[in-house]
Image 1 (cartoon, rainbow, N blue to C red):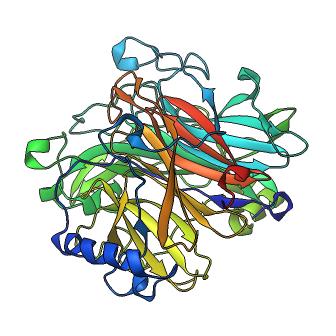
Image 2 (image 1 turned 120 degrees about the horizontal axis):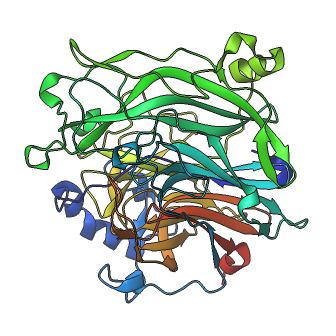
Length: 490
């Protein structure tokens, strides 16, 4: 965990929260009991981890209201915010008269799925970018490298000279439609990440297409095999329940080595293909859709067998440095909730002062409150998560202060408010502050609303600060610096 930089790292990732007013009656019936326990229990209640009990409890500040701007929360004074990427509208879409090529690294109003990597004196933020739509045809990966000051107390982000394209569009850029072609799958995009392996930077990824809709949330996400025809639709149809999108691997995996050049990044090798692209994909049993061949540089990527021996060793056997925590679940159980509302999606994780681990999840089927699960040891699988009284939805992020106190950064349903809640024991979160309220009017796209604020948080602690990155309305990319001194015990 990059001990030389004394990092306490957390992050997490993937996609939309649906709205519903259904709540679990069984969990709701526990609410009065949980509050009563909180009022009289010692800091770490023996009942907190009893079967069926939520492993965390939230005590909202006086004045909290989900209807208020800023939720009625007290502001944490002393935090600072900066826009890292403010895009220009793109006219590249092939189906709207464009030539299918991005005008520059500054173009494309869909920007999301941001992540963080620390390398030497650089804080590298990278994210997905498309002309307008989430996971649209020709989506690519961009990055911006900031340089830490010598005392690690700040980051100098620079201008466009520190902005690069890590993974180009693998197919011509076009709009993502709500209805898809019945015969072909032309929505390919680059699903890639920046990784630090054996001290070297690599962009690794695969070609994926967001294509088709299902009425069953268990199929939502990346599909490894055909889904039942009864749960497939070529078009989105919310009246029939077909509102969950599907992501199909297109066969080709790729890798490229990168390195620093001055204050930015540059390729340090050719692009290599680890596996071959598919010519067709089976979406339901016996039904295939053709896939067009990728464009350059993927079409001309060299076989991975031609890569230098050091690179092959890194990619196949190397030790990857982790800059995010991913809660460990038994195979096939990552969406499972204790109340049977099996729509768990985004996730984060923290360690309590007593050594136990807690995963915090949102649930696409039950918005407005986070779910959580607890386990004794980091190597264990988490049990099904339980609904808590912690207000929020979409992706949270969590971590610990240097003294061990856990914190969680949360999001409200409209994704306009970013707020931090803090706990002494990792059970009762009774100190909460607003970090940022934004309600931005944005260029609307597929799975991208016409307004919103900070969302899908990623965080890293370096030196005296917590650094949080996020998208704003899935359009801009921003960062917030939280000095640790603001969270000292009173």
